Length: 320
Length: 320
Image (tube, rainbow over all chains, first blue to last red; front, side, top):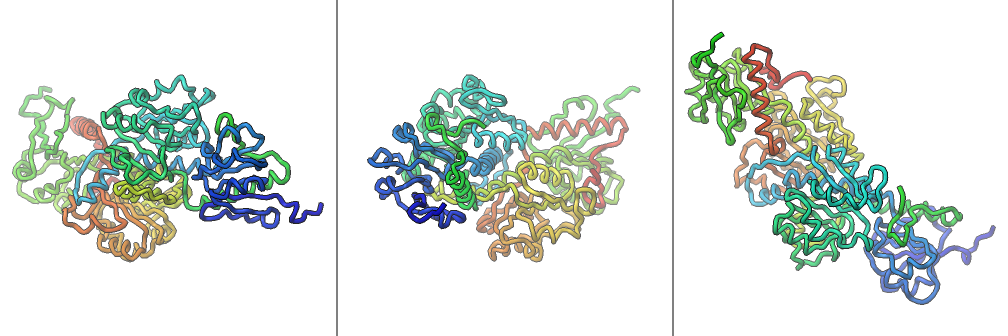
């Protein structure tokens, strides 16, 4: 079969820095680049949309416009809440995500936060800044109990890593299955947990699930970590829970508003650690994300089934 | 055998807060308490000396004095460098330490430091203090290489915990044995290490071993952690190595001068994390240390062999 330029599929890339290295696809695809502002105008030309700037919410805004739409959208992220809108969900467009890239980095990041809070490193470095030698006792991590909310590959990787440190880690998912608790076990597990880790996708069922009632169920010694999506947490309820010492501390790597504005009071809540949505972002990941897309593209071009296909109704890739 | 008060052995305790809970020994031992100032005067009365204040160097000062000396000295610490002086080493007095209490807490602390440095948590919390959302990329920990200097139970626990996080960890000891490298491998291992962990006892052979030459052997991306004893490190050489970017960072939990004085320039060296000798100190450890001493005392009182007996020439408990 002769393939001329006119027959090449069009790949539209919603750009971020650095640009994706498409390597093997050179000459086999017509690549268009776009920023957020031009996305809506370019969308009708695209066979495939690569959401390389996975912090952008522009796809949700551009999708309901007129014209044909790409048959496949891939996002270089685990979460897809920034993409899905009713029109995309109802369409025949396939959505895939970056499952497989972020799991282990995020699990390490959670382990870093858990150990740092157990050993009180934030206060140690605050004392260092003031030139003060303030000896304290840390807590053991081995033998403590964690509950990980989110039974996808990220939540399961977090549980594996915590178990390697001697933590008893329970995973809670949407439906119970082998080794995974269902929602009906959540409150009972929260009430005994030393660590509560939020690693669920953002869906209608999970939005705001960490609210006043759930923080009230936790132990005064419990610490809460969110590496899922900001809106899983009612941030006002979390601040009150910290102020009232319902829980002992919290770390948010994701927030309802990102970037968190400089004047947000959240920066200065005692006992609250903030990091800039970086738990999954490690040196070298852009190369991994690019190689993953190239592999998926070759499947798509060959008419083979895609992997990492998102269930658009549920808002995540189902199954193991 | 009738045992009256006159026949009770005398236990002298160099006090620290909280006092040891001697539980089962009540009525079976005459307990005298002392502070550093009275130690020399009280020492001749003691059959057993419990160095409960393991930060004190008073035993080294008091030992060469006149009069009989206790036949057994136990320290509630892993290191014994604060006790050993030529007179004690030459004497028939048995010295025991707290082997078994600090290993796992120190291993967790090292894991906390390694993960915190990989994920750049110190800078993240500095940005939080300034209300700045500064996204960066962290490093993976799995797949990196560590060399742990010190093949006692603490060094081996550190290696085990790092391995659980996917780190390739080599242990270097005084003599090679199964799974332990000898000193002749040290420079070669240092040259390839991402993490260099000092966890050796302080002896004539280890004092100042981390010097200009050894920091020069390390990779520019390497990070150095000391949880052994401060004088293992030439601190001036470490500061120069950080300033010249011979290595990427360091964390000292132990220092040549403790507490580190408020006006020490070490507090403010860029890339250097300081913590107040707390890596092994966890909630509940006083109870564990007290129970361990009670067990050893019962062995001693029954004429059975002690455990955790220090080789006073070498300066640590030999063997596995």
